[in-house]
Image 1 (cartoon, rainbow, N blue to C red):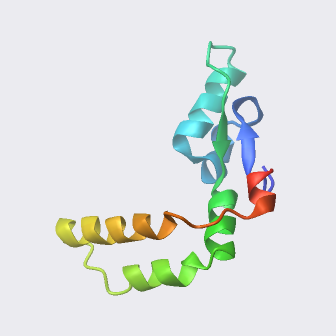
Image 2 (image 1 turned 135 degrees about the vertical axis):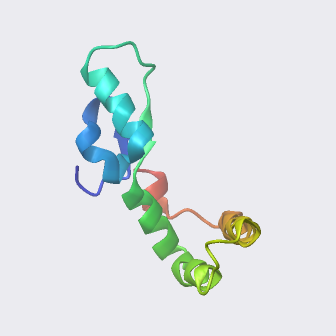
Length: 99
């Protein structure tokens, strides 16, 4: 799979886990096997990376993760919440929105 941003289930397989995620790749395999799966698509990891780079979130996310105690569930949840808030209200690049 190339650096596509949006890919239909019938175009992916388990070999695309890195780009499509586990659930998306498994749904692709089910479609490839001819099983009844509602039409659908995945937003790829390339789209996510493009969005955080184009919106300037990369450094902000890294800052929130720097020095994070991965053994503290409370701190993990707090950092996760803070990172989710970074995405609220960011503008989606036109080329990503129309891909």
